[in-house]
Every structure is written in structure tokens, then in C-alpha cells.
Length: 245
Image (tube, rainbow, N blue to C red; front, side, top):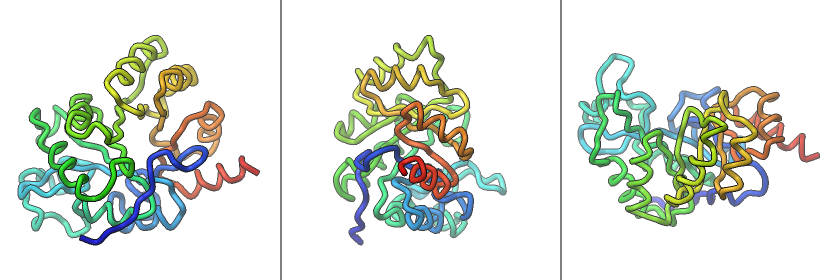
């Protein structure tokens, strides 16, 4: 296998720019071209979504079904559109960045799997691709990231959420920290400065999604957010550089 080189989660000084599905404002999302472009822009990290197809490959695609309505978990890899990469292909396109891998395992979708086969297959693959600090694994399903923790405790994990109310922040932070998770990924529209403060007080990083508005980016940076997941990593990088001058 080609040996690529990736970054390490959170090693760069200052806030991290995470390219949402790659540089998806200028390239087709979740494709090798989008990841290459994100790296060319200087992104610290790329975010991508994974699912299992019928032939067992881990593939990178956000939705459970294709545009024609066919479910990915019912199709072999050879039947999928050519722009959909395997996870290994996508990771090789993310060279020099660390990678946030989102496990898609939603009870409302056709590929929902309580056995966490996707998490198991992903961990097996990642163990062949170098040290764990190159990856940050997230999911809306807490059981999925808990499974990852049990399979490879050294692999950084994060809980993905549409939001945490201020009054729940301390409970959520303590629960995540006690389970060994390193980060929380709240939606940008619901995130408050109080939640950021509480998460940091409990040793958790805060990476928020998906923010493309420079004014909101500046506010989040003022709050001390650790990572900006964005469709426009070039805009975020330029803003961070401007603020540093």
C-alpha cells in the first residue's frame, strides 16, 4: 500500500481549519479532488463521511442513498458512481492533513446497524495506515464512538451533535470526558460561548460545523473554539492569518 503522510490531530498551533467534505465550495464534496484541493489550500484537516456498501468496502458519501434513490448498502462498489472513493482512497488524497472521519449510522436510514460493523471495519483499516493520532472519529450516534473507543482506546473520538443547551453542558461534558472522548462537535447555529467554556473546563476540544460566514468565524475564534469545520477553508485560513497580524 502507498504510504502517505498525514498530520496529527490538534498539533498545529492555534485554531484548526477542517475542510467540510473537502473543499466542497469549489469541488464536488467527498471526492478525492475535494480533498486534494483542501490540502492545497493549507487546511489543517479534512472531514468526510463513511458508509458500507454491499460488497463490504467502506465508501465516502454523505447520504444513505444516491441521487437516483438506490441505497448504498444495497450496491456493490463496482455499481457506485466513479466519483465515490473508498475510505482508503480518500485518506490517501488527504495527505498532510489529519482527518475527521464521521461514521454514518442513523436509526432513520436504511443502513442503520446496531452491530456497529462499520466502526469495526474502519478500525481494522486504520490500524494498517499508521498511528491513531492522524484521525478523529465522530458520529451523531454515541454508541458508534463508544464502540470505537472500546476497539482502539488510543484513537481520538468526538461526539457530533446538533447542539447542547447551556443548562446541560456540564452533564454532557462530564459524560464525554468520563468515556474518554476528546472532543465535541456542535452545530454552529446552536453553539454558545457558555458551552465552549464548560467543554474546555472538562478537557474537551470544541470543533463546530458548518461555518462559512467570516463574521461568525471571528466570533467563534473570540470564544476560543478549537476547530472550524467549513466548506470554504481558504476563507477561514485567511481570516485566522489576518487576526494573527
